Length: 303
Ligand code: AMP
Ligand code: MG
Image 1 (spheres, helix red, strand yellow):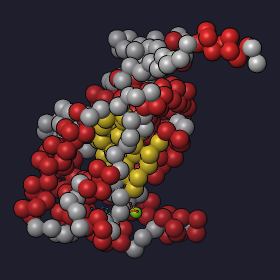
Image 2 (tube, helix red, strand yellow; image 1 turned 90 degrees about the vertical axis):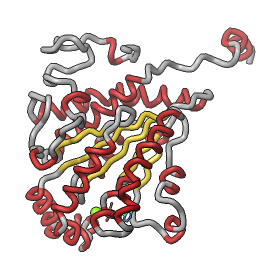
Image 3 (cartoon, rainbow, N blue to C red; image 1 turned 90 degrees about the horizontal axis):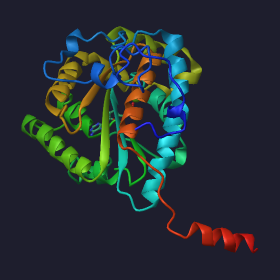
């Protein structure tokens, strides 16, 4: 478990004290505090809350910074394993309404690790070629190879979100997709990928403020799309569709984590914890040399 350089240094005693990897400001482990279980009620979910975390913005930001070295080292171990015949990978799935902060997670959390080991993919409106195939076709093609941290900015879940809200396919078609998605994810996990599904949940009011900021700042115009207002107008239908996703696809194999996203610092802290937990859970070592180290030293010394 605590095999990395950084995790061997002494840590502050934590209130729970059971988990030495848990910072004192986490009163409940993030994987527990944020996990979507039966009875999860999206309508009642406070999007400015900080579930499980007792610290403030400054301590949250400091904690993310402190995670950087460990995240980076574990990612390198994963990459090394992939290079040495391993089959494991991690897939971070980011879902959320416009302005929920998906891009910020990529920049501020995924950005803490070596970009060589990251396979990032964003999913927009399907291309004509993609539309000729099953909805999972483009997703399968984008799965991370062994050793990589894959990041999906939107995902196959759009096919039960926008597709459902905008009636892009008949109800019987999107209805069948929840089970298809669960089966698909079972398969992906069985093949060696740890899936971390993150729903970034921004409030209606905060989304308005963030969209308005995009319209007021020339350096943010590029992030604005007039369609964003059209999606916003369908807010209740989207919330209903998100509720269905969380009810029906938060499985033992690939659970959802609900992240309050009105405070960007908290969302970033939460996702950094979830990613770290996934990597720690792999119990990654360093691949042994597949050559004779002593013989190589002698050969080198002779040059
Ligand atoms: P953005 O992520 O803000 O750049 O926007 C991407 C757009 O592509 C969003 O409006 C999504 O709803 C849309 N999109 C993504 N996947 C699908 C899909 N499978 N079917 C239809 N629209 C999609
Ligand atoms: Mg957008």
